Image (cartoon, rainbow, N blue to C red; front, side, top):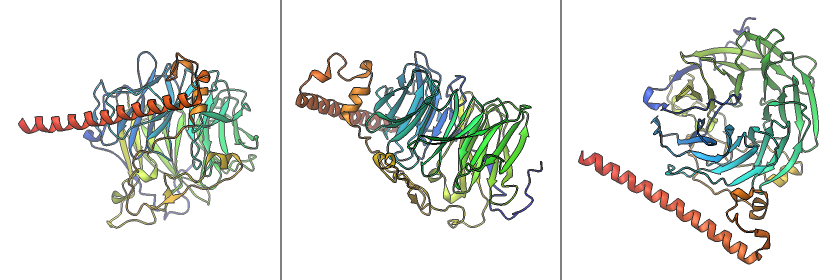
Length: 468
């Protein structure tokens, strides 16, 4: 197969080039998790970098402000709520301070990350989601509805949660075997899954409808929805060659495109940019990133180029478009995990002009949700609310995730209750409300004191440097 274009040689992305950042802009001395699970181990947004790390006595992940590059102190505080290894993490698209995690301990958790640098380990999640009977390997947020989170576990169960109430909305047991991947479409009306039974499924969770498509290879496969509603897949042939495909979900009889790549055995993780209609393929254990443009004319999936480096990648994070640097014509930024570091890689379109490039930066999905969870559950669908990239993007300040207390208390395990030694149901409502308010006030006091300590440490550091 000839990967190079036979048509449309005028694509503005044909000269995209990748470049690793300077050494001092990497994040060093990170003990990346060695757990055998094919997730990306990394999640990034315009404020923070999160990496699943090795930890003793349970599961943990590291959260760093993007600006805190360089060597990471070995005593840097971690997020440590899980009792088993963390398997997947995902930042909320509607709040840059909210992240979800899932673990071998059969739970998913939602965390509020403060804007200031952590001074002690974070062990108290906003909410614990319990509903799976085996390890939870996938966690992914709904793209347009507030507080909707999907989890998939090794019990072959998919649960859609309203994290603002701490309760499950939908439970689906349509998969007979291990679920490899889940991807929402652009407006969150459908999601697609890949499974160990070699089937690609398109699911409408509210109508409980599922459509199937076969796939040849027996090794793990990934699938993502693209902008026009088609599905892009990575998988393996019967002869264990890696391949990628493009499918019309209304007609799985014949693929739109099918390309064989190579004979490597690492799972190809696809990262999709809906604004540019480009896919970046990052193989676990590979030392390269291939990128393709998806177009409306044959051969539909056009190979653009490959970024190669010396060391193999353990995982990868993909920055949302609102986090790229428009002044440098950066159209994507990936965060490559090595054994003990995380290295940002910028993807840039060379342009001579310093002016804002309208054709590279159409309005992109912003942080405001398009609807409430109840509206989505009732059958409403909305595309993402778009924002302009013309002036660059400034992340909003932290907003507290509001959770309905009654449901959260009912659903959280007794070991995590703020009042674990008493039966909250036996308390008078007024007293319970007062106790909960007091707990919130104490938490707020702790947060403010942590920030004050950080400020004082910064001043002390500046004074010490000045006297030196």
